[in-house]
Amino acid sequence: MENPRVLFVCLGNICRSPLAEGLFRKRASEAGLTVAADSAGTGDWHVGEPPQQQSQDVARVAGFDISDIRARRVSPEDFTRFTHIVAMDEMNERDLASVRLQDGGTAEVARLLSYSALPEKNVLDPYGMSDDAFQKAYAQIESGVEGLLARLRQAH
Image (cartoon, rainbow, N blue to C red; front, top):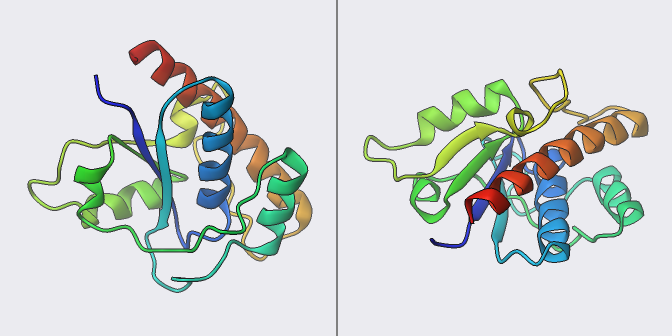
């Protein structure tokens, strides 16, 4: 079976999805899993920009660095390049459906918190909010990433 290739997607690719990408890489490495990970946004407002400083700060405190990630927009080809495309919220998931071509590859598309036992269905979008909002979003992301990794370990 092929190694998982996971794309994390949020709106602008500067808050939630870079955190998910960085945490997923860290935890997969710690678990000895061979995976590929990337992140993207459904919008193009921040293409080429690094993650927001608050996201970088949360990552640094959690023991990983996301400062080298640059925002990009999700593309139809991503549905072929990745085995899993993981949306941060319902709107991102809906937007992904409009990007996917008719013969849009075999990537499994799901919301991150569908892998979590948390009652929430959407990861909070902390853009423009307080540091506490970034911490809450990170806690949700951590729960979803752990669930996703558990599922990938079972499948591989």
